[in-house]
Image (cartoon, rainbow, N blue to C red):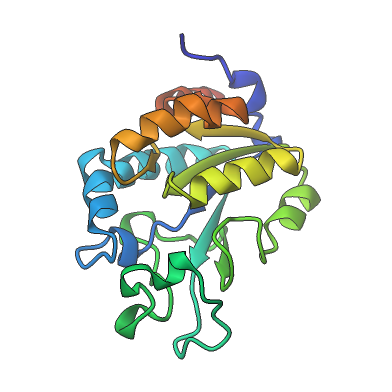
Length: 207
């Protein structure tokens, strides 16, 4: 059964948060090729384009949380995530690069360039921006559901926000992990619905 979340999607109280849809993760030279393949196979960027267009059309702000470390690696904390597979060795040391072109930020959007940690609320201004603009519902999108999206969903709930995760607007590696994470974890901290349900609500408000 698909949940009805229309009451949670008032544009005046809603924001879309996108996690790490960047070139070094989803582009042709991805440091995590399995994740890039999954995103391509499910048409993640196409889904995000449609969702973001619907959001902007009713005044919902898009927040981008990107991983953009110092190019010289100074201040980087050693941990399994940043050390794994040499993600931050050589050309990858400065983070994950620009946001993928089809969903590149527009002037009215907000970008938080995170240098530490792995989630959207850690070492960023995301929480005060949301609170200062009256946001109570976070629509969470992007990659990956393995860590960044999942962790941000839990943090959003801990901060008192209603969390909605569009099931086709997130990706994981391996792809089957997304189903387990959404069914077994995310649905316990928020609402999981197809992106089209959200798009339909906002498009109806525009008509």
